[in-house]
Length: 332
Ligand SMILES: Nc1ncnc2c1ncn2[C@@H]1O[C@H](COP(=O)(O)OP(=O)(O)OP(=O)(O)O)[C@@H](O)[C@H]1O
Ligand SMILES: [Mg+2]
Image 1 (cartoon, helix red, strand yellow):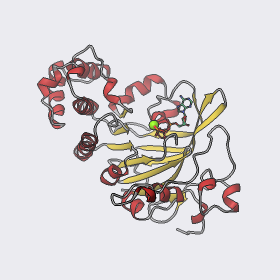
Image 2 (image 1 turned 90 degrees about the vertical axis):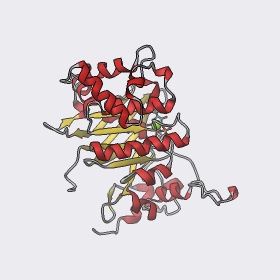
Image 3 (image 1 turned 60 degrees about the horizontal axis):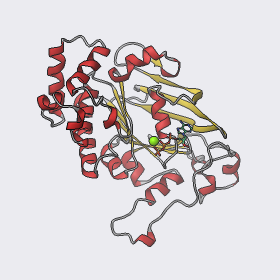
């Protein structure tokens, strides 16, 4: 796959929230490229900007958010590239579901509680002017539901409250595949489910990714799931992408000191509690901007330059990127 072969390209994105205390810099110079068919995990502590970054891709940011600068470009399966940040709401309505599906945290509640599931499949098809009769849409819906191990007829004739959380989540996956999207973004959509169901659903999505040829961006706090599902891992810290590495290399040899800390913080099954590691310090206040590397107050390798100069995300060899002055000397 050539590096130019991408479906989504985010470049130097800055997103602020207007708050009473001033502008909160939620996404700070983030760059990310998604290639056809790949699965990318986005990880980082709570509040580091994962949801904000994901919501910007489908232009579903809260009203007090402003994209300050940067670009988000999407390449549909057919036709010309679309500049998401400057697209109209009408263009975005066409893209959502048919090209890019976003599943938010606790997304099982996104079904309308008073209509049966089959109506929701038909409405989605109609809203996107699918060129199929109602009978054909229902046939396809039934097939998709069977694909996620559900009884198609029974589920189509149910109200959402008649389905368990796991069944609702699988129904939502079937619904997301109805229009054959090219990119599915999952923002911890399974956190309301028990751990075994979560894992099963994510593994199911991963096998569908291969058979249905879509790319996946998934946000999770569960690094165990990342090892099983991700081709690539993107680490965010205080709004910035600080590392972007193929998954196996990331887990074997994390490059950014923050990634090293995150991996060290995973409890080992045989570790005693007193030996559990946590990264010292806390995340910076995103309203106040500090000079230099945002991680430097917590970094054991911090030196003068880190306090003065923001490190850029750059190649650190192979297909790996990191934003850290430690690697400035590496030539590639
Ligand atoms: N609507 C909003 N108005 C003001 N600030 C917000 C808003 N939404 C998020 N934030 C702030 O923006 C920053 C990034 O939030 P975001 O929700 O993107 O983080 P996250 O990485 O998804 O966190 P989590 O892992 O907890 O879901 C945080 O400091 C958060 O408090
Ligand atoms: Mg979030």
